[in-house]
Length: 175
Image (cartoon, rainbow, N blue to C red; front, side, top):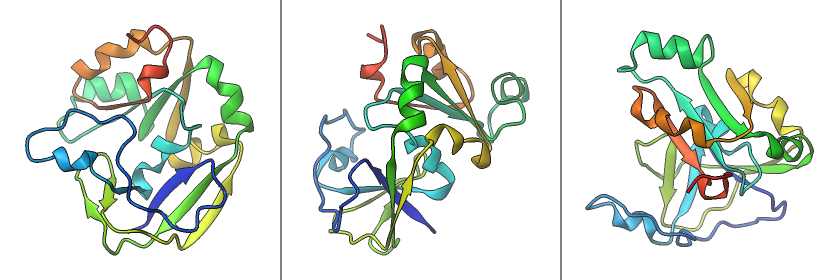
């Protein structure tokens, strides 16, 4: 299992557990996810973090329960889709992110969109600089779709697809 953490910081020698910046309401028994942790993403879901840190995006993919009509309508032949607002496209083209690879020892799988956490400090085993992020999606069989505004996509959460929204507080007219 390959685990990664993405950052714009090229000089992270050690990841120390820290609480999330903006705590989320968590289901009963999972409040600990706001505690100090090191977060990582598995290789199958790393496309979710191929964005500048504050970039709002909506990501979707099929599940075993997704109706075939929805799968065809939203995914076509793609494994997943990533929606981003047009005014973020230039930053995707020019920014550099650093993908830190981490050994999976000490990580716990959340069984939620490829996320893993550790309550211990983690020393990365490798760092890879990644530029031209907009070019990273197609090789992963992910369709990057640029839209003027993410707000019209709010109803995606009412489909049979898995839908993740990240940094949506930064999207135009989201509230």
